[in-house]
Every structure is written in structure tokens, then in C-alpha cells.
Amino acid sequence: MALLIGILAAGLAICEMGEKSAQNDYIAKQIAVNDTWSFYQAKAIKADIATAQAQVLKALSSNSADPALATAARAAEARAQHETSDPDGGEGKAQLKAQAEHQTEARDHQLERYHQLEVVVGLLQIAIVLASVSVVTEVAAFGLVAVLLGGLSFLGGVVVMAFI
Image (cartoon, rainbow, N blue to C red; front, side, top):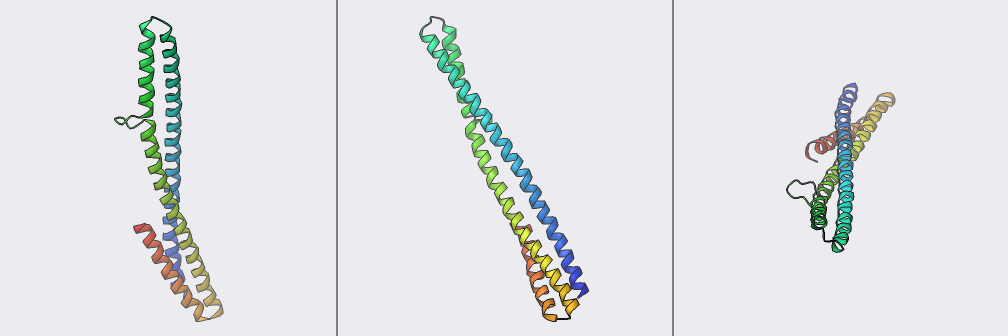
């Protein structure tokens, strides 16, 4: 039974490393999502400012004979369009939104992995307790349940770490 407890503890340690790794990946991906959405918001503000600037310059140019105002209005419109969509640079609002949504999916996947491994770790801890109870009470059924629960939990953890 001591060997079983040792094996379960080793499995627990492996699954806890996977759990911690998934948690760290989730946090890193959350930071990336936050950064991308912040960049998106900055682009939105810049686009709105450029649009407002273009509207003001257009209004001024309609009352003035100065061609520089019309040129400045067109430049502001071009800036607003560039901030809204920049397919070449990938840093327009539209591209940043798509990137943030993709990052959100990846982040949510890591959160799912973390929660699954959290359950595996909890079940392995219960299996260790049951094995210990089996030693103290000399009831073999606790040991059998510990073997089944621990084995299935560890296999589940391996599947989550390797394939999910």
C-alpha cells in the first residue's frame, strides 16, 4: 500500500505541474488579450479623432478658398481609414478585433484545460487519502477504490495534458 501511495503522489505531482502550466498559459494569454483590446481601443480613439478632424477641415474648406484645408481634410480621412483597417500592417481596428477574438478563444481553451486538471488533481488527492485510510483501517476496499480512482484520474490528466 505504501508503494501505491508513492505512485499516486508521483502522479499527483505530474498533474499539478500540468495544472500550473495551464494556469500560467491562461494568465499569459489573458495579458495578451488585454493588450490587444487596449491597442484596439487606442486605434478607435485615433480613428474617431481623425474623422472629427476631417469633418472640421471639410467644413472650413467649404467656406474658404485655401486648397490646403481640403488637402488636410483628405489626409485626415486617409488617416481615419488607415486606423480603421490596415490589412498590410495588420494593426487596424478590424484586424486587431479579429486578433483579440482569436486570442480570447485560445485563452478560454487554456482555462478549460486548467479546470480539467484541477479536477484531476483533486481526485488524485482523494485517492491518496483513500489509500491512507486503507492502511489505517486495514479495509482493502478503500485501497481498491484508491487504485481505480487514482489510475483513472492520472490517465485523464495525461489525456488533458497531451491532447487537449
